[in-house]
Image (cartoon, rainbow, N blue to C red):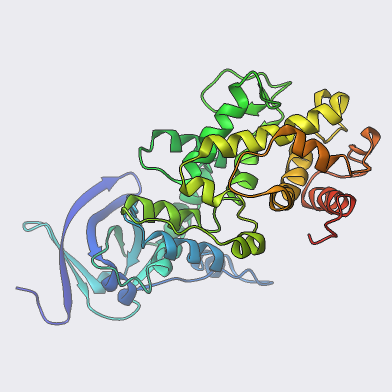
Length: 371
């Protein structure tokens, strides 16, 4: 029987060098009530303990919004623990029953790690969502700081390329998986202008010639298929049919490959990309094959710049079909870009250089500028 004013739930006791803590699971709605975050703000002349006591970083609203969208998907999961610190007077552990009793009140548990996950679940109404928690009782501020810094400074950030590569293992169809497969075709096909050029994970690398990362290749392509890949992937896993875009919608959002994806014609998407860049390689062969620093055509800046213009060319030439090399040749014949233009002096690495190249191309091709 639950004691009034207390939350009781099963826990196991864990002992490690830092001390003893408790692992259990709590419903999301309970955590929303009892948990609070002490946001760290560095100000002048603050004492060490005051700085240590404010552990959490400022909330990243973009990250919270992404989590809020993710938790609504069919396979949402947070397998790692939310870490909480609770004062001794607010928590009691029954060793014989392996039951933790926590005061049922607001702001009882201080968040050491997991504030973005908790905030992302704040408006979750899809059903039950339990979170596994690690609870430290009467934890000193210095120890809170050690745990927080250990988690956030020693963990290795997962590369986007690895994420896209792992989509190969997913059986369900998704925009991410399709783009990953197209990247592999582009890298391995003898007819591809990108043959041997993409850093495909899990393979021996030719560092000199692999000028594009897998994520660098996939992301601009993914943007031509979906504005919300996570939602599309979840809809497909749930057996929902994706709705084709109208011509006006395609033009407005530049989703020139979306209908082809919906029709499961990924091969046509791949052909359009390869036909387009085969013409780029044919038009500027020396610059495409140049691997020396200072040249951008075959690197991320050149690839993203030309990919920004591809949807406009597809809209002009015709949607939802294979566009032949000869058609791309006629379209790119209008550009006045010379081979000596494809340098870092003209188009520096980064977003500014990519945008400048795209605007130059759009102006050359008669589309105006819009990036």
